[in-house]
Amino acid sequence: MSESSGLSFGKLYAVLYIFTTGAVAINLFMLGLMGQAIGLPALTPVTALLLSVPLGFPANWLVTRWVRGLMDEADRTN
Image (cartoon, rainbow, N blue to C red; front, top):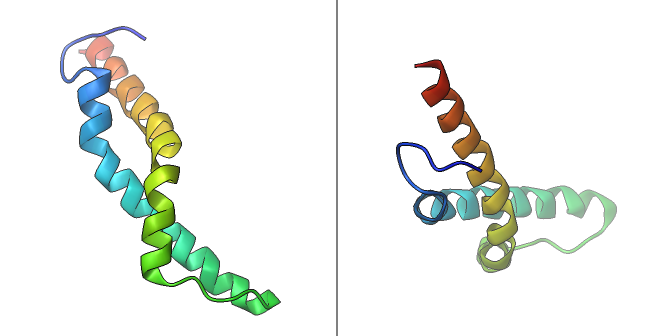
């Protein structure tokens, strides 16, 4: 991955982490609600948030790679 203008991968990773973790928490909570249809216990919002903290790291790595690629593509076209 090339380092072009803008934020470095590490800085972009740090900036996007809170947003990615929030998205993971919302998705886990919704998955917990859907799980009730097949008899699983409900997942509370707090539990979903606590589970999203470690799960946010790999998800954020993928999101950061995607955004960095979009930024590099935009740099190449300009």
